[in-house]
Image (cartoon, rainbow, N blue to C red; front, side, top):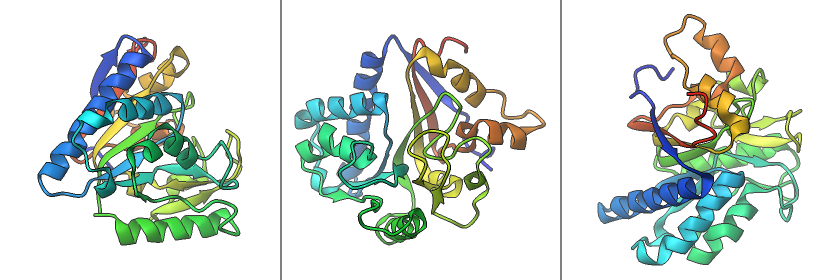
Length: 250
């Protein structure tokens, strides 16, 4: 699916704080460069501890970035299908960490359980939003990686791994609570110029090792079902941003 794309790069930082600062600075540069070229950037956000640290660094560095935040479009790789005010919502975490502070206005949320009757309805609505507002490709898509190798809400062995001709899907019986979620599909995630995996901590070292294993191995389909992180690569670049603990098995 992605074998014709550039091989992943690996960037290792001493610790999570250094990693967060480096990624935040690079993200600001990418957005500013895109805007200087007359482009409206589409940025895919993720949730999780390291993502929150990066978001707070973005807010800290934003004043000197030259970014016009009102002209950046933000999307989410996945979302928990819970009430809108739930602290588990990725959008709420991102707003609190940086989106509200910098004045972002084009924040495309996945409908919550307050706004949609089911995760399927929320997925359909979000797919329509992505289709109608996006440029077609993410300029930068950031993805966390779970200890099991999952990305967004695409979990090992789950039916969502097989979705075809879909932008967003409902996910049920998630092995990680809450059980009901909405996720972009492999096809949607692979429509990104740059894919950045953000991984911190020794507990994810094995998943990183599996995610970066030789892509030429015979059982790639089976390896993908075991480690979904193997299924996404950027059109122009893929970078694994790791701290030293996450990189310890490489």
